[in-house]
Length: 110
Image (tube, rainbow, N blue to C red; front, top):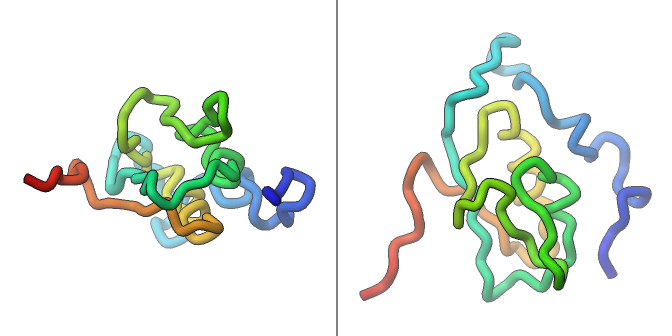
């Protein structure tokens, strides 16, 4: 059973984890991209928690699976969404999300 927005504690909502990282001294570098969100389709079963926690980058398709709102296969995570992205990865019940460094995209085998 997937969680609804009402079942997610307030301290875990996107509003609570977005904004300047306290470790950055309050500065915001909105244009910098440090990581990309990667979905392991062999693990994902479309529960939708990631789309609730990282709604600016991921939306649900017709079947509930996450799709990028930017059109990228592995959407870039702006610095202001880094904390929300880490939370979405940590909370994924199927461990289908991961963050991959910089502009590195998954390599194809062969």
